[in-house]
Image (cartoon, rainbow over all chains, first blue to last red; front, top):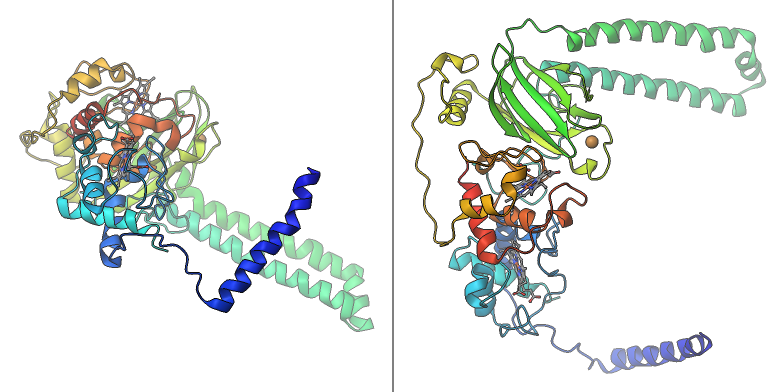
Length: 134
Length: 341
Ligand SMILES: [Cu+2]
């Protein structure tokens, strides 16, 4: 308890110094948050598709207010690092294939195939990859 | 049947807007609400003005306000007259709400369950002709008598666009007249706290223009034996033949999975061995606008998400999660249910 309290101000100072340095040098760009930057129109269409086919019934998805079921993992903070569903390399093509037919893309996956066209799946992937574009 | 729309627009009629009447019974309730609100505003303004004058007015005004005359006029005569007029007018206005049905109206029995609605269309002798759940279809411009019942605790039936509320009380049947004067989808809710997910207990009312109504009735009763043309409430029609349903790619038999997974013990699907009564009738679930008692649009995702994990969507509801189903099993069941029109 005491130790934590003592640490507080020191941490704040380091952070303050860092901010000051960044402001001064204009050299502290955040590390790249996204490898794939989505086309906003595709992403917008992707969100419409997500709402039409009801992905929200199994996932918490940013931009979808209701429903927020949890048969599947939350997609809040879903980004393009780390594998899809713990297994597939996280590329737009793989993501589109996965959301369209998960058991085919990842045998044994508990996520059922969804009624999406290839183009719709690509837009859905664009939306999900766009979540972290900031 | 279902148009695209953004997630929580009332495009399938839910949640329902109040103060937007679509028929005569809701009209009088809405008029009364606005008049009461307006009078309330006027009285509040008078009181605020009186308080202001009592603090900041001249000596003469203050003594007048504090006098016995002011009490007689402002405290007794004014409210007495206004409230009497309001009572007489209000009773006259809402008399139609408790009008006894003539007996010629179409009849539907709606039974509240924790936390969904059973809907039965009755013939003139009171026999059940057609059974459905969480959705009520009506012809435009016709008064319809709703027989309100409950299977467990007290619920209350409320379609704000079409009428006032009325309780559904165990062991009793209350009658409520509703009428829609324009076609459309009107959301309904349970308006009496009934425990658990009461706030997620709704249904959708659909009012059809006359030719659409004829089509709807024809379609719903096509497979029922003994339904003659003249049995269509208010209409004479020719029965349509049963259109074939398209096959799908999933190799599993959704029907068999439904029967073998325990679903049939709680759900009825007419024409099959599924005869359960603990949950909503699924005979026409493929045509349903909503799932989960009015709270979800009906599509592949919500159907599978509901079956797999309804407890995360409507916590406490009486259907168990089916998280042991594989992806293909879940999909097969959903596809089969979508074909139940
Ligand atoms: Cu309730």
